[in-house]
Image (cartoon, rainbow, N blue to C red; front, side, top):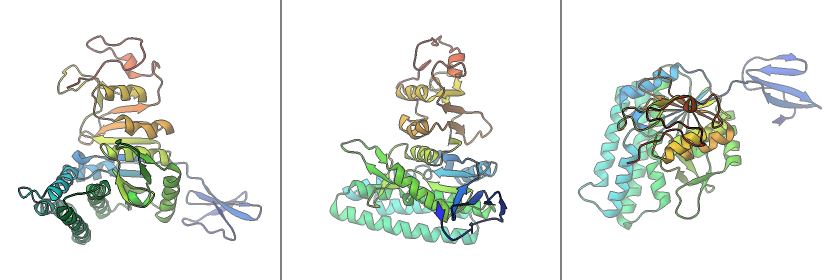
Length: 376
C-alpha cells in the first residue's frame, strides 16, 4: 500500500536502516518521494477449527482454551456452534412453519437460551457474562420474531433459514472469545459475515462459490482495523453480494477454515474433532483399521468417497489450491499425532499409505487410495 506524506506506522518503535523504517513487523520504504508500507513479518498464520463436539460442555470450552494457550501465534480459531444447537435451530424453523404444537418453537428458543446461559455462568466472570447474556437475549429476540413470521406465513425461504441457522456460531465464538479474554489473552472476535463473500450456486446444489478477490480485500481491511495475533471467528456463515447472510451448508465450518487457510496463505489448517485422525476404515466397525499419519489430498478425497466422514472433499479444495496442509487432531487427545493431508504426490516414497501394509493386504502399486473405508 502506498501512503503519501507520512512515515507513521501503527505499532511499535521503528529505526531507519538503508532508507527503510522498520516497525512492529512492518516497514515504510521511501520510493520516489512516496512512503510504501511493506509487511516484513514472515510469521505465517495457523488456522484451527473446533467443531460442536469440541464445544459441547463447559469443560470442553476449557479444554479448547488450554489447547489455544499452547499455540504459537498468530492463530485464527474457527468455531462451530455448540454441539446440537444448529440441529435445534433447524427444528425450530420446521416447527414454526408447520405450526407444530408438540414442539413449539417458543419452547425450543428457551431451551437454547438455557444451554448458553448455563455455559456463560460456568465459564465467564460477571462482567463478561452480563455482556454475553445481553447479546444473546438480543439475537434470540430476532430469532423469535422471524419464527413468528414463519408461523404466520406457514413458509420460509433459504435466506430466512440461513439467518436462523447461523446464530449458533455467533454465540459459540463470543463465548470462546470472552473466555480467552477472561484468562488474560488479548484476542479479537470476527463475525465472518463481515469478511467472507460467496454466491449461491445455480440449480439444486447447496454449494456456495467464494468471491476470492472481494473476500481477500475485506479480510485485509479487517486485519488492518483489528491488529491482533489471535482471532476467534465464526465458521459456517458468510454473506452474499447483497450483504444477506448465507451458510456454507454441511461441513460448513471445516470449509470456512479451509477458505481462511487460503486467504491467509496459512502455515497449516488444523481440524480439531473427536477422533485421532483418518483411518483406513471405520474403527468402530473394523477392528484392524489403521490410523493414517499422512495422506495426499487425492487419497483423502477417495477415502471420503468410499465412506470416511472425517474430512469432506469440498473442505480440501481451497487449501489444496493454496498448497496448505490440513491436520486432523483430537481435542480430547491433544498430544496425539493425528493425520496430515498434503499435496504429496501419489506413490511418493514419503506417503505413509504407500509404506504401510494393511492387514487385508490391500496395498498395491495402482493409483488411488490404498485400502478402503467401510460403506454402510
